[in-house]
Image (tube, rainbow, N blue to C red; front, side, top):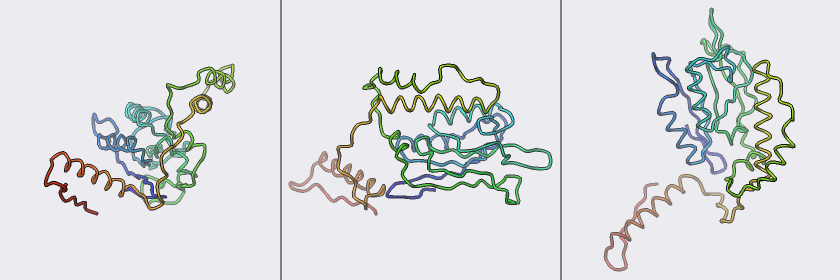
Amino acid sequence: MAIEYDSKALWIVSAYMAHDHGATPPQDSLKLLVSEANNRRIPVIIGADANAHHEMWGSTDTNARGECLFDFILAGNLVIANIGREPTFMNSIRREVLDITMISEHFSYFITKWSVSQDCSFSDHRYINFDLNFVENPEMNRSSKPINRKRTVWPIFRANLESNLQLDPPTILNCSDIDRAVDLLTSAFRCATNAACKPPEFRGKPKPPWWNLNIADLRKTCTKLFNDAKSTGGPKGQLGKISVAT
């Protein structure tokens, strides 16, 4: 499903990853969708019945399916929105976290108040609740702008990184300690990158308020047809008729 906000698009996807013998998640169709979303810089939210275990999203253990899915999450520039270890799947003999909410990394601020509902779902899978926040986040927008890493000011990067990293490595005793260490390292590198890799200033004309993705696609189509008409020639002074479905 695609929804629009402020002339922008957001893709919302429901995915079921069947526990077939020998199958590894996710399916190829989901890989293609995430790749297309990244290429077009469209944020995507994926709610998945993953049938996969990984401690990173709160499962009691990690299995091979979970490792495959976690590799996809990292490669697809996605982040896990799950919070805590409340089971999303419950029956008379089993309680486990099998349902995962994923979102594009640079738009993770869209999801707030993620939780597993206590309401009866009349199913062995429980409802997942979260709010969608479309208010612009200056810090996240700053990091989502393109960065020319070839122009990194390395002395600034090193100095900023050293000042943000603890000198003594944190003690790792459990999964919570790992999460805190990852957050610390990620935050330190993000701060150093923002300080040393300034994004290019926008020099183009701002889009008018009525501009949207549909108009952008129509413009591309018109440009292609116009160029095709020029290359094929025709009666002098004419380039042929160009019709675009709206």
